[in-house]
Length: 304
Image (cartoon, rainbow, N blue to C red; front, side):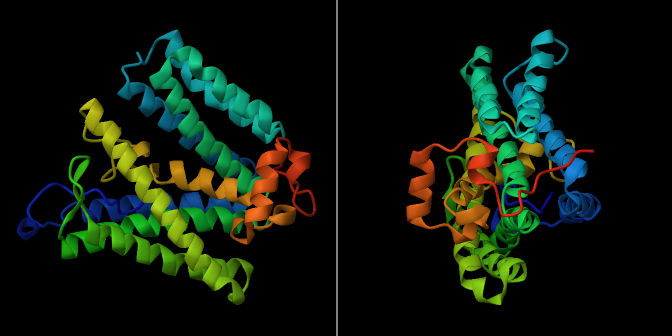
């Protein structure tokens, strides 16, 4: 789901401009409702959304590392996450992760992309398929990431101030980071209250903050990657936003974190009900298939 974005052009504060804001808003206004509808509908629509986003990011990752677009190796590289997603959708989660692990045949750089992007895609499927309420959890993660990104963009442009990580992304500021964190906390409280009842708003604030921190770490990591590869954007598929990696970098960390936390919530409940004891038990028990963490009612994604 495209958002305003938190990476600012490296211009002096006195030279701030908002000329890219209109393009960003138009792109978001067109694509965000489509994404929200697919998330709400679930089933084949949601699976297709995750699959398209995952394969699109894998294509951009391959391009960053010079993978020839029309080679058989590139075709195999793009098909790899499709196989992992197919295994997950059929209920074989362990197989899905083994498929991602097998991508080491492409070499360390390309393999790391398969793991990072593939785990995020699997996490989004897990949250929708294996938890209650699946729709609410996916929306919680995406909204918190989006609001954090947009809040950082707006507050950072308005206030400026000391740089957050000048060696990685010279335009990001501490004020923007704080603004994104506060925005995600408010959004998390609201979404959590709507999804699980008004008494859970405090949990929403706490986990909204966690999603914001994860999203900002993902943003900084992707900025470092682009700087290392000598590119400004990972692609140009979204007008005013850049590539899919540019806009979904926060989800690459936030979604797996949310899915991991959900393992510690009893009975497939929302990840904001996680307990330390439940998480430790799940991790050391090594549950890997659908039956080990089936939510009440045994919900599954039906593609037909």
